[in-house]
Length: 250
Length: 357
Image 1 (tube, helix red, strand yellow):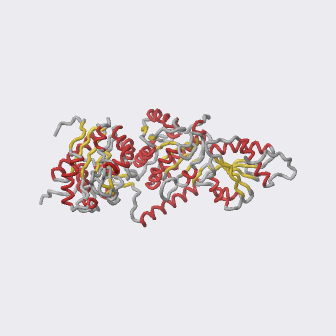
Image 2 (cartoon, helix red, strand yellow):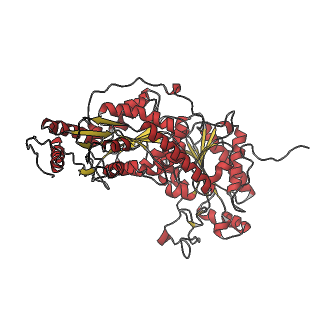
Image 3 (spheres, chains in turn yellow, cyan):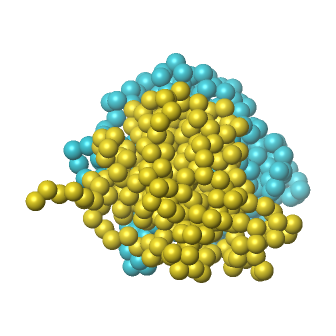
């Protein structure tokens, strides 16, 4: 019988620890498929964050080095500067990349570090139990915003990816969503392109992935996917934010 | 220090400007270009120490340098370096603190350096050079120690040493390609299973095992690497304990009081961690009085007291805030305690230099 579907080679045969309906499992798979398709498993180095994806090394079957919270892009810089012919990617949540690691993110992009960042935006600190993230939407509930995020009291959501567009060294920035099958296909394309940018040595590339967190949003998975698709995209529209790769439009 | 690092095979430097150590990144930015290395001026000390982490994971000899406030920011990374068991060299050209303090030479980061500084159960190997030649030699050695024990090594200098000029003999240049290969680095899973370098060990039993493994390593470092200098100890009745710049000042003071017939020597720790507590304890068999002189309000004095276990009087002459006492001032302290304890010979003329300031 012909095998028509199998697990990516770049994923280990371990069960995901992620909650039911969590977007991480999908995004892990997309990244692993891209690594397979580009044939770069043997020379790829992953840098997982602190956060729910801290255990990413249990899943990605590539060399991985764990970074302190927020510092993934600084660690990735160190690795890539030593191993220039390797492929280095970070996998970071919104708190990691857009709060505690804001400086590291902006400066890595500005230096045009030839690394790929996967930025998972679920609007919450998942691992620590649902506190306000830099990306929590106005009015959205969290364990540290009684009555929902009040932009006067708590500040407005931060669009880090948009900020990175200003950095001269960023080459490709796209926001995608894994809330719909169509979105997942687009997400994979974007991730593949972000790795291609690195392979071609063009500069910094990042894909922001809107991703549901049913557990901390206190929704069932179906509602959480709908909410990601309908509500998150109002503040974080799904689109190419910057593309100076010069690749042909697909 | 920069040239010694390059000669030790260091090809990667990540740093952020801070006085009084800017000569190091400035030198490295040009020198590393010549030898095909990489210099990155990071956006903060937090970033630079994390770039160090990345380069160390990839197997390179790598260093950063900073001064006190910057080294405070690096403590997160140093804890990770220790937990991840990564070799790296961090130089702290210590200045006066706390807070922004000043940019004058000080030794007030002793606790931070020798107690770990960051979170968790770990140790940093801390080397304390007292001359430019030793700064060169210990920098060279620091890379070997870091690789041998897969542990961060700190070089503790101070603003004085940071600005001092002395002739130096350099070791031969090492080609990093000639260094022994490391079998734990993350360099891509080619022809081998993928590797992980991590410090997250959620299972308490596993983390406890890891901690005890580190303890065994630190025990080995203590056994093998504890280093100190003995100066005029043979007949000494009082021993000054001082390191780095303070030890050089103390030597001047000891020469002065020796001329007056006072039998005083110096024990100079060259490693602050591991601390030379055994030789100190040994000394107390014949010496009953120790004077700790440090350019801080009194930090190393605690280690000296622990070392001698009450078997000797331990006095402190601590000058914090970036003040550099003269050899005369230290000589005054030496003679004050010397006479106070009645250590002089019976027929010795009273050549007192005066009391404690």
